[in-house]
Length: 476
Ligand SMILES: Cc1cc2nc3c(=O)[nH]c(=O)nc-3n(C[C@H](O)[C@H](O)[C@H](O)COP(=O)(O)OP(=O)(O)OC[C@H]3O[C@@H](n4cnc5c(N)ncnc54)[C@H](O)[C@@H]3O)c2cc1C
Image (cartoon, rainbow, N blue to C red; front, side, top):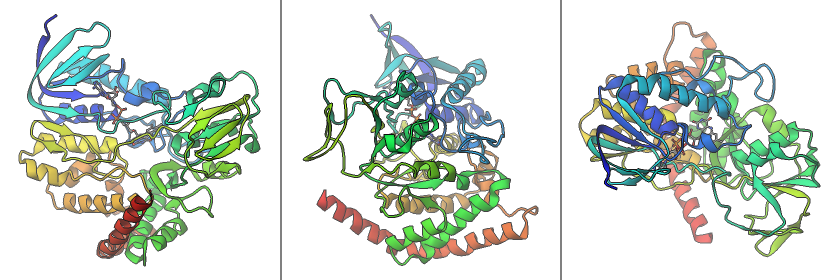
């Protein structure tokens, strides 16, 4: 069967949040036509595979695509997110992307969407169901919207052995349980582990029935500081100022994290355990209080095998039973570490240009693609902020983000674009505003004063981070 020939300006691989946010800006800011290819049958990427109780971790108001609001503007009145901006559920996120595709992209007449199709490279893709192949002539660029390789428990393969007879499955299976178990073992200390723990506690499971296997503790972001609306100005901008002051004044990396925690920028499960991980997981203070009710936290490293009576960690082990539910939360949501130039000739590899803000980054990179010609300048404006993994990556990301913010502030026109883009939750708040109260002005002044001092102290702190990382590598 010969390949069907297609022609387009842009070929976008992936209709996840990143591919969608990129396409949306191209549609708004250019007259280009676009082909979007994805293995999934609906836009939304990993949200297709998510557990039924998943929600966004950060407010809906700056997630999705630039041209369409996702949030209703409501503040939660009940639950552990009470008092904070709403978090869309997985179903809402899926419905939202479906609407973007059906009501904006396809009616434009400039987008052709090929779901259930796998891209093989070199402009070629094929239908997973029919096997039909397509060859695309790309007049402008191919956009790689798959860089993050987002991994979720329902689609990943655990890195340890599971003996026959062990009840083990992704957290997607939890709502299907029909009778009590001896206990519940959560494998994984990241955001999905947090979600599983909160779900169990919310469904009448006592904390002492839960065992939480946590190979590394993480630093967590306080969700109150990620609220982009003016009513949370003092929290959000206060945290930015505290963060800049912490970087400015820290004697060393340990001291930096002490200051960040004391100032409420970062939080941890156990004040006696020093976190070694930072993935940008975001929780509310009420969620943190709930999670701290769980006392049986196992810190023995990674699971190597689960038997019906034991969970092994290399030579060490803990007891379990064959009537215990073992919940897989061990997928690392974003497992990539390598970074690349964003603009590479006829290819764009969409990565983060602002810390853990993939959709804002996709929209921003699309804006740069649509409005600049010189590839060197484009890459300079889109320097990658690496995805965090270790605790010290908080500083690596902050330094890279500060550099980008500084560069963008010198670029005519960019400020207006940032101010008007809904995926940028924060530029609006940083601007001097005549409605600001004296307290708000004072916070902005703190930020303005600390920022250059933070820049001056960064090289010293970064040098220590490099030493810490080298020592960890040598010991691993
Ligand atoms: C539970 C959870 C909650 C999160 N909450 C937030 C949040 O609140 N705020 C936030 O900013 N971020 C959040 N994130 C981070 C999240 O990773 C990003 O927001 C975003 O969804 C990533 O989108 P993506 O398009 O990069 O990846 P994906 O969603 O994985 O999409 C990539 C797509 O590419 C397709 N694809 C890959 N290879 C091919 C191929 N060869 N051919 C065809 N198609 C291909 C895949 O099928 C997939 O649909 C969350 C992540 C998780 C797991």
